[in-house]
Image (tube, rainbow, N blue to C red):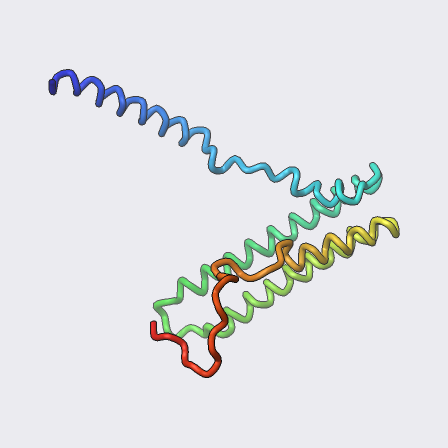
Amino acid sequence: MKSKLLPVILLALVLLNGVLIFMLITKPHQNTKKGPERNFLSEQLQFSKKQQEKFKMLDDIHKERVMDIDRKIRKQKDILFDFLANETINIDSLVHITGKLEAKKDLEIFTFFNSVKEICTKEQQEKFNEIIKKAIKGGKQGPPPGIDENRPPRDQNRPPPPR
């Protein structure tokens, strides 16, 4: 019986190794499509060819700037956490620089959207404003996940239960 089970186990291991090698080579977990996201505004606002060209140019410049800022933020955070063991370093100054970079990134994003709005017609600007408002609010309204809406309200006169 053991001699018949050995080839079956060996075949299963070979097949599993083949699947693992295939997944390592093709990396299906990293194959995410980013194209449609970039064209979302262009499609929603129904840009003309000329507007699409301007949008692509603005988008390319924006991506480059944000990536540069992100690299600087990562570098600054690496410096900060490299000094985690060193208590003599001025953490406040490192955090302050990181905060300035985050603010610069936010300003770049705002500037990009403002530039996109400028290439829009009046009708497109109205639609653009609606899209941005929805994006800022975050799409889904309601209680945060994990909150049971059917739970009875807590009596305000009693303390919360112990944990």
